[in-house]
Length: 236
View 1 (cartoon, rainbow, N blue to C red):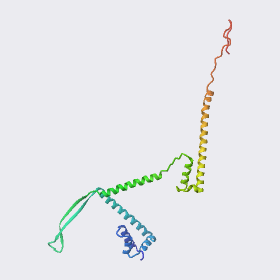
View 2 (view 1 turned 60 degrees about the horizontal axis):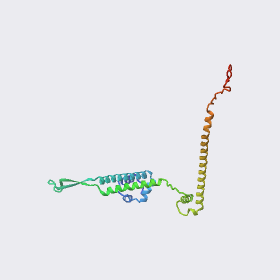
View 3 (view 1 turned 90 degrees about the horizontal axis):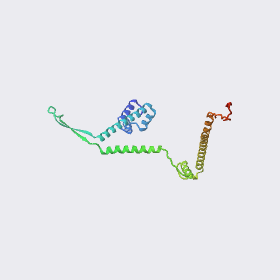
View 4 (view 1 turned 90 degrees about the vertical axis):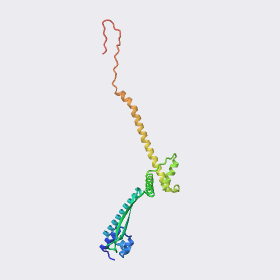
C-alpha cells in the first residue's frame, strides 16, 4: 500500500486517542506492521507525528491516573441517576421521561491506595539513601602496612580474589606504595626544613634585639677623689 497523507493523519489520530494498538490500526487500514514502521522510518514528518502522538497519549494517561489516585486518597462523591420512562400519550410508540432521581454516594478514601503511595515514598527514600552511600567514598583505616597492601591488591583486582597471584596487580600495587612512601618522605623533609627555619628565627631574635639597643654611657670616675688645696679635677 502506498503512503497517503489522509491515511497517515487517521493513524496519528487513533494513536493519540489511544483507541487501538498498532496491530489493530494496521489491520483496520489493511497494512502490515512492517509497512507502518517503514513509513515511520522513511517519512520524517510521519515518524515525528507518531512520536508526538505517543507522548501526548502518555501524558493524558498519567494525568488521568493522578486524578484517579487523588480521588482514592481523598475520597469522592459518586452520582447515580435513575430515569423512569412512560409511553407518550400523544405518540404511544415513543417513551417520554417521567422522572429523574439523582443519588449521591460518598466513597471513602482507599486504604490500598494510601498504602501504595506510602510504600512508594519509602522505596524512593531507600533508593536515595543507597545512591548517597554509593557516592560516599569508602575509607578503611589499617594499623599495619601488610594489611594495607593486601587491601590495595584486592581493590586493584576489582575486589576479586586471586589478585596476589597476578604479577601485574602486585607490581602495580608495589609501585603505588613506593610512590606514596616517596611522597611522604618529601613531605617530612619539607616539614623538617620549615621547623629548622622557624627555630633559627627564634634564636636570632634576642641577638638582633641586643644589637639594636642604644649603648649606655657609663659615668666617668674621678681618678683623684682627694685633691690638695688649690687644685681642681677635670673629667675630659
